Image 1 (cartoon, rainbow, N blue to C red):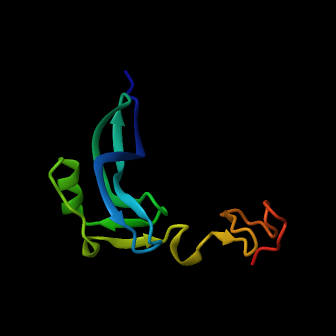
Image 2 (cartoon, one colour; image 1 turned 90 degrees about the vertical axis):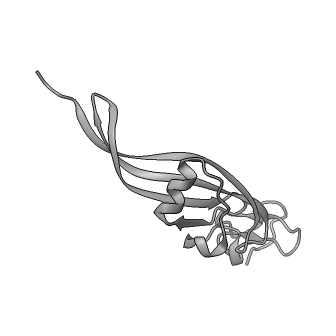
Image 3 (cartoon, rainbow, N blue to C red; image 1 turned 120 degrees about the vertical axis):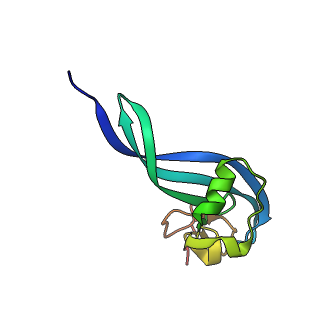
Length: 127
């Protein structure tokens, strides 16, 4: 007799959406919450999870935050929760914040996240 087991990492998107105005990019968007975890599986069925971490991602620019475990568990249970600025710990600034990752053409206004030296729209050199 043999057993098939394994340890893997996983991600679960939680049923939580909250509209907001982003403090990083100034855009209008929403917070989306997900949980990352490590899981032990037996015969391809998850038996238990540990190392749970809860993350909040802004839909406008992709800025990533963490929240504490108690608040994350409340969201996972479906309790009504409103995220506040003091609940969020910044992990990574998204592409829209303070010019990170985006280039804008001074001639035509074309924006890109790619590492172009010249604007693909009008061939103007990008700064």
